[in-house]
Image (cartoon, rainbow, N blue to C red):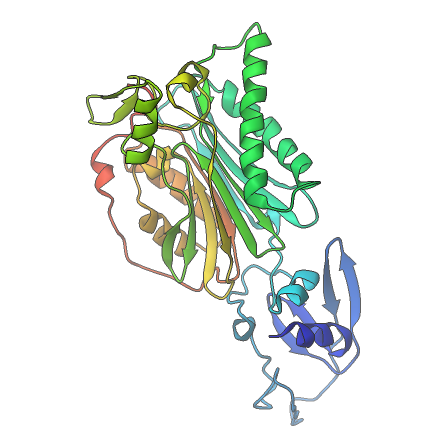
Length: 381
């Protein structure tokens, strides 16, 4: 749909714009503004069942009286009732649904660990940008706690002057890392300079521009056409480019009893926020970033997960299980519980963000991850 059509639609057509459907009415629209989006509300005209209602519009092409569904415009399922974001829809020339934080599913289970060092955060940074993040702490929860508390503040400050979201995330990660170093240095009760955390952060602007930044082995995955599309790549010594940087910096790689490589015999990742005792050996806080334009007709959800889930369930399996669920909150709880049932001993945390194709790609297939044969052993050798 062109931007011109959307603008004309907003100005003069009789439509109820919501995820439940596009319904043509005979009376004029009553626009109601809710923060950054508009929802048009209409009154239905009276008619008798014997009436034959005729329509010459594209919203009722066969004059059946049945409205054209959202699927014709790229929005599939009516179980999550959301309005469209009008300004972005006009700007991009296609309907873009609002993503409400109240619909996002989150879950975090302690597993077999003594403490839950995972942290997660979901918030609205500006009227255009939503924030989703998971942090998996190690060596204590100090670093994950710090990121949960301050990461979004650094990003919000950077958004005031920087339009490029990938650059915003890169600067925010590095600034938070420096701030954590100062905090640990001056805090008398800090656990020491070996506290650290993974960080996987997603920013969604205008409901269509998705940018992800990550360090460590927490992951982001987009479900597109029912298939898992990985948005992050784990930072482990198994990657040649990461291993080469560690060695050039004077670090070394060892393997634990499960065959997992570790930096200097201690850390199972090559990038993290914190772990300041390993910074001189090539462990960095600079994230790898990825930008994706959402296609709500194909994209069902975004999932952010920590390694308590990733080590025991592969991405497609996570995708399939979530696609079987009715709501994102149910999906998040089911995935975190299933990881524990499959044998994960680590903390299991997940965020599920629904998009336009939520409920479209149902699958009864169950794939099995080879990694399920191993019990996730956490960060330490």
